[in-house]
Amino acid sequence: MEALEKSAILNAVDTLFDSEIEFLSELSSHPSTRGNEQSAQDFMANELRNRGYDVDRWNIEVEDICHLPGFSPVIGNYDDAVNVVGTHKSTTNKGKSLILNGHIDVVPEGPLDMWDTPPFSPRVDDGWMYGRGTGDMKAGLASNLFALDALREIGYVPAANVHFQSVVEEECTGNGALACLQRGYKADAALIPEPFDEQLVSAQLGVLWFQVHLKGIPVHVAYAGSGSNAIEAAIPLIDALHKMEARWNEPQFRHAQYCNHEHALNLNVGKIEGGDWTSSVPAWCVFDVRMGLFPGQSIDDAKREIEEVLIEAAQGHSFLRNNKPEIVYHGFHAEGYALKDHKVASARQAISKLENAHHLVTGNALNMAPITATTDGRFFGLYADTPSLVYGPAAESIHGFNERVDLESVRRITQTTALFIADWCGLEKL
Image (cartoon, rainbow, N blue to C red; front, side, top):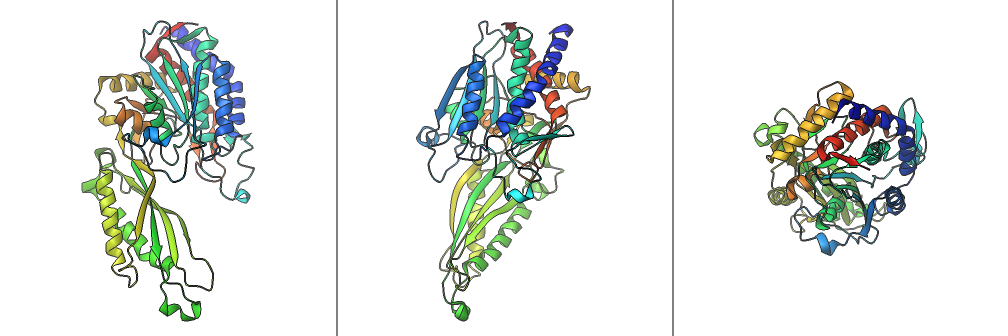
């Protein structure tokens, strides 16, 4: 690219930025928690269609993807799991193809009285946009779309095929991104603008979700000693899992990208239910657990150790000793992925071009760092041998109250993305 073209692209992002903020606000007003993404996906499909992209909108079918590597087991059906992909088809195909991926699903908002303003009524204050999903990751969807818009604003489109993906299920399985692979969407690289503070993710952890089901003996609380309290029985089992968590974080087990990270793998008991009546000893308890895994760590081996830990802990309980815990796996069966370990030549080329674009926009070198979460990047990197660049804006309180995204950071990410597309894909006249 000539310097004049680069300048024109940056200026085009600035020209369209008010429209990008309006778009982000509208998209973030859709309460697209799991199972409720349809209106947001309708909005996205219409925006893509209005721009002239070939739009593919479909319901994910479990039977289409359950045999594929990377599939995560689900509870319930997928009647309302809708993916949207808009495709730009190049006329010259002289550049490298690209996937621009983002997820439309957001986590539940929690108690509304803990928010300063309603979570699905986005507001802008002092350069930040507040609202559930503004950062994680609807700002990323906006930056992907408006990076393409900026190129069109100056009369160009990518000189290679580009697939703009708006997927569901990132927050619990990743099966939305997997369904895109199953449907045939492939490219030479993928860019996912998750909100990691304008840093390129060098490695991401795997994640395993599971439930532990416990039984007890219900009696009137007046005779509690003759029963077995299933809720209280969970406590030593949770303690045993945390001791396992500590072992997995020991230096000898760490992946190279996490060698200096004292506690990269986090176990979280995110939900617990049990009992039927306050004056009855509870006969049942279910608690939900999230556990991190290092890149390269076997999911099957992790599951075996989890089961062994729980069974061993149950041996110390008079009732559970003969009524073993039931472990149910659902949700994330996610392997870790390290971009730094991706050996294909295109990975180094993609990183280099993103580094150049980032430096031009910010004046700073692009920092690469590992994260202690997972993203949909693993699907492209592990199962399609496609370098997956996870690089997005600065955001705060994602998954928390008063989630917010830095709008100037969104501007910079949009500019960097537009420059990266122009360099990676090349340009052809509109």
